[in-house]
Amino acid sequence: MTYKDFLTSCFEELEKLQDNLNEIYDINSFTKWDYDQASGIITLSKSDKILNFRYYQVGTYSTELKTWKWSWDNENTTKKVAVDAEIIKGFGITNKYENLINGEFDSYEEIGWELSSICINLIGGIGVYRPFYDHLKIHIVLTELMDNDLADTEKNKYVDCENHNRRRRAFICQHLKEGSKNGFEESFETAEDMEFEFEDDDFVAWCNECEKIRIEEDSLAGKCWEQGKFKIVCEKCYFKIKESNA
Ligand SMILES: [Zn+2]
Ligand SMILES: [Zn+2]
Image (cartoon, rainbow, N blue to C red; front, top):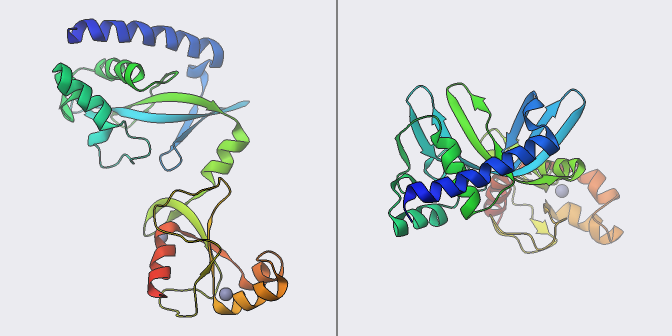
């Protein structure tokens, strides 16, 4: 199939999806948007309503430079929300579709919608949201509407660290510091960037003193948690402390 034919069919699909999106959610009536690259959730809000969607980012069009940049080629886009280069680029290479192969290239404004329609065809999605920031038009594919409480819970699993940007949260007792050498107790074996086995899992560590209380009380909650004055640090900081206490 020629690129043009492929694009035409993808674009027709996208137009239907956009009509749906407008009809169901009145998506363009929202006055504020805020995306969280760590959790992959975008929050749209207006005075009387908040909607949360899971999303991925296709890329950005710069009205200043008149260039398109794929999210997989953008170091400011986290892996969590960038499109899978293997799928898009791989498909481009197989079919010799140049727009899917080059990370950044000169183009016209409509390109963002075109490439978004192709991503939806190859990866999936329920429609496009296209906010802009400064001179960048950001092309976002919404994949799923989320319950607002669940979205808050998921977003709260990440923290902003002044040294490591936004990361998964972790908990440590007040006695643990880099090089404190006072133990590093955990309730399960951990490793940086690991996937948790259960949804409720968190990184939690405490010192030898807190461990004594935990054993006495037979619980991490209650007295141990209170006296340990557990605080939140980012995942990266957590593993720096863990390594330095080994
Ligand atoms: Zn402690
Ligand atoms: Zn940190």
